[in-house]
Image (cartoon, rainbow, N blue to C red; front, top):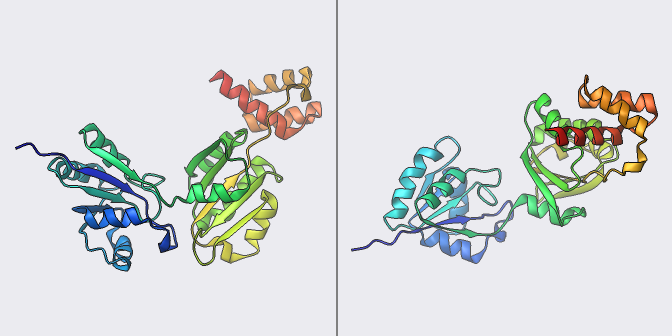
Length: 284
């Protein structure tokens, strides 16, 4: 007797409002043999709300590789399984990559059930260009690492997004103000689809001051949608300014070289900084 392998369903769940779950997701969660959940205690509330009694097992960052082998064995034995995260779409800054990869390598069918995703929800309501965009996940928790990542993103011309923990939100906005410049537009999308949903768009300096003045904005799940950098115009920088910048880049870090080049030549610091970043990318 030939056993047909089961299907691994990657199921998006609500990020806040429980009515955002799709009818198909409910049907699959009821019909599969097992649900692999990031946190079974957290997901138990969702299952209880919709009267779903399907067994669950934990599949998270700390056990996913080992647990994946056992789950794939069940899939190969013919069981259908569902993968969910605590909220939103699995694998988007959430566990699941290793299980999906193991399943695909074993020849198991993987079927996505689309639904809620915080970054897409934030992007479509931000009012910033969305034809091209980049997602950076969570920035590093430590200040030095966060600032390095932001410096690497300063010249990105696409709209880009990050997730940020509420207790680090203000520090992140202050770093953005310093590195991206006070006028760079940023949209704070907080507690999306929940009771206290917030969507505020402002220059980053203004947004940081607003968050600093309202501690309620430093709570809950946060997405930051950042306006892309303006495309540099070659003739705005003189040949002399470029010569000075190139010379300084031989000896100094990018930020310091751009600042000194601006002082020496009278050029715009932010523009020279973006050009210096491009120089680094071209030479790497």
